[in-house]
Structure formats: C-alpha cells, structure tokens
Amino acid sequence: MDNSGRRTFLGICLAGLGALTAAAVGWPLFRYLAPRTNKESAGKVVIPEAEVKAGEAKFFEYAGSSAVLLRKQDGSLIAFSAICTHLGCIVQWEKDKQDFLCPCHGGHYNSDGAVTAGPPPKPLPRIPFSVAGGNITVG
Ligand code: FES
Image 1 (cartoon, helix red, strand yellow):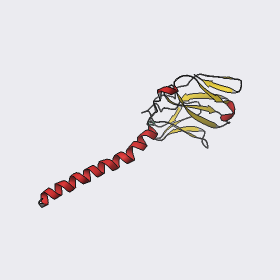
Image 2 (cartoon, helix red, strand yellow):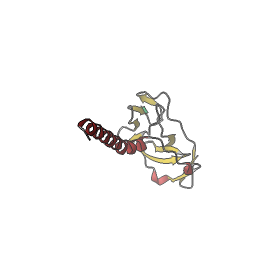
Image 3 (cartoon, helix red, strand yellow):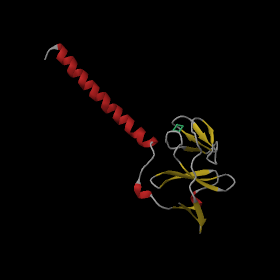
Image 4 (cartoon, helix red, strand yellow):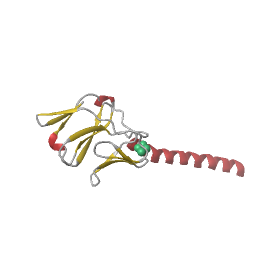
C-alpha cells in the first residue's frame, strides 16, 4: 500500500470512528429529549393523590406520550401534555420557579400551561382527569 492508499484507509477509519462516536453520544440525548411513543401506556392512568404534593409535578406516560400532573401551591390539580408546543421536546418542572421549562430552546410555561417566554406558539394542552377515593384518574 503506498502513502496515498494509507491516507485514504486512515481517513475512512477516522470517519467511521467519528460516526460511531456521534451515534454513541447522540442517541441517548435524542431518547432523553424526544417524546416517548409507548403504545402500551394508552388509556387511563391512576395516580394516588398522596404522590403529588403541593407545588410538585409528577410526569407519566399517557396515550403513548409524556404527560404531567401538577398540584399547584393552592392545592388545585391540573394535567397537561408534557410535550412542548414548539418542536416537541419534553418540558421540565422547575419547582423553585413554579413553571415549566423546555430545555431545547428555552420556552417557559406557567403553572396553568400558558406560554410566558420563548418560542412555543401555544399553551400546553390540558388532559382531563377526575379525583375519587384518594386516586387521580387521568384520561
Ligand atoms: S421545543 Fe420547546 S422551546 Fe423549542
């Protein structure tokens, strides 16, 4: 193998190594940020009331996607899709600020799901629920 052949071979090896490294780093990041699509979780979801304390949020799978149940500081409950209305990342609850942050482009939603900052065009969609016998039934 001459020098140009070695360089070509080395270039191919480095490109392959680069692609493997990008996949190894990118796939877990994609799985973390992308909405989940577990079809088995479709239907009603029952959450014990005691699991959601004032000012806290509980994330769960609902109808094949991510959802969140929030107990506001006044004790009232509200359920939303946890999918950002901008480009579909999963929002995070910021307990100290009592708002939702979308980590992808800095979108913010208040505890009613209304957009307060950033690029999201619409509020977080609400999900119906009922409370009975110490359980919250979503859906
Ligand atoms: S995807 Fe949420 S702000 Fe862009």
